[in-house]
Length: 250
Length: 268
Ligand SMILES: Nc1ncnc2c1ncn2[C@@H]1O[C@H](COP(=O)(O)OP(=O)(O)OP(=O)(O)O)[C@@H](O)[C@H]1O
Ligand SMILES: [Mg+2]
Image 1 (tube, rainbow over the protein chains, first blue to last red):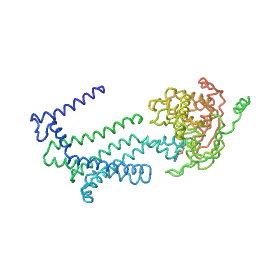
Image 2: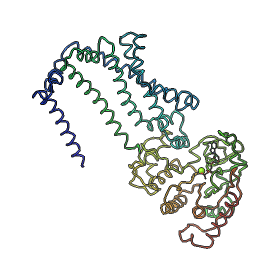
Image 3: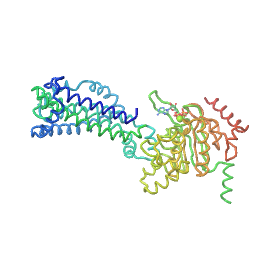
Image 4: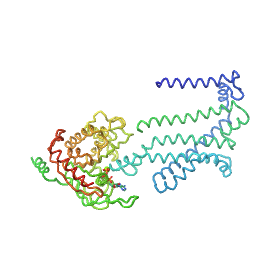
């Protein structure tokens, strides 16, 4: 199949799905109380975006996501680089980190709530916690991807430590760094949502949980579309940058 | 006239040393205890000479080359280049070409060649000019904008050689630079290297496992023993220059090749 054909098939599938979402509930094939028609959901989306309470919730969630991200990524990257570069630390901490990485982080949420309450801090702390391990793992892999012969070449031409870092490590790791950013944002966003839905008084996650409990389906689906759009937009932006870097990855 | 007289004299007896290795020994302190890799190596490489080092796998050829490049410090002895000891990498005195071309995949061919100059923050224009000169010298005019993955194995090694020469060091060290290439490309590259060598007048120290390559390229071949590496023979290659592919079929070529082979067999 050509590129164009693939795109057309994808578009067709999308139209088919959205069309089904619109038509099936309207014709009563699917219960519209459970799945409101797409048109109604979009109208509702426009409506809730205009509500001050929703706008405030969006700001709160955005702040939590950004702060948690800004904490988790540098901390995870620093730890990852440290255990990749230092054999001693690596031998000790790598297995431990792998163990913790494999545990679903959500089971720790009650502890975060006990210790920190249900405010901004708790959600940020929990999201950062659930993100930091994947950043550590990726950063370790990124450092280990730097080829020893590249470092040797740079040194043989008199590169200083700093130049080896900026001219070999950073460009070697760039594709990994972008991938790390993308994947850690997925973990981070999920962390914030779980924390907000589990116990919170604000945030989009809290609103979504509430709408679900009160059987307000149009609002619920409007929230889902909003979050999906934001998440996909971030992911695709980074993926676009990744693709531009990967020309030289081979 | 003076110049010519000097040149012909240098063919008869070794010219003043471009590289002098004086009683170098090396012991690796690895996981499995101490590994003696080199034992009392002494050798001199005259300016402008093409010296090839051969020896069984693991005898310490790469280790020796790394020490000449200042990338590793020997446990004993001294290595002098242009009369001064080599303690750290000094790209003004020594250029290095490795077995893998080791080009940076995120830089174009031209930017790869410029890399050593960029490290020294040479002015952009001078860098460009110099790198383009080198690109042409290695026969890659028009390929400067390509990325390494868009080049063949032979072309990559040409870029790597250009990078080694860009700072105009008097000495070029090469560690099995053509080992990863197919035989035809390898022959062409050897021939090309001789052209570049005679055009630039560099001193070359070249490691290889190919005896044919050794005889074809060298002024002299040094044979090393198995680990711990020592130099057990020095064979002068008296074939005239410029070398031609036809020479490979001659008796002299065969005899030289055979002598090296006998030495290596003894050494292993
Ligand atoms: N960093 C190191 N630590 C411990 N031992 C090493 C190290 N580097 C090399 N050696 C050992 O030193 C010896 C010489 O290695 P070297 O790479 O110099 O050999 P070589 O002659 O280049 O071999 P080849 O022909 O296979 O390239 C080998 O036995 C090798 O195992
Ligand atoms: Mg070697």
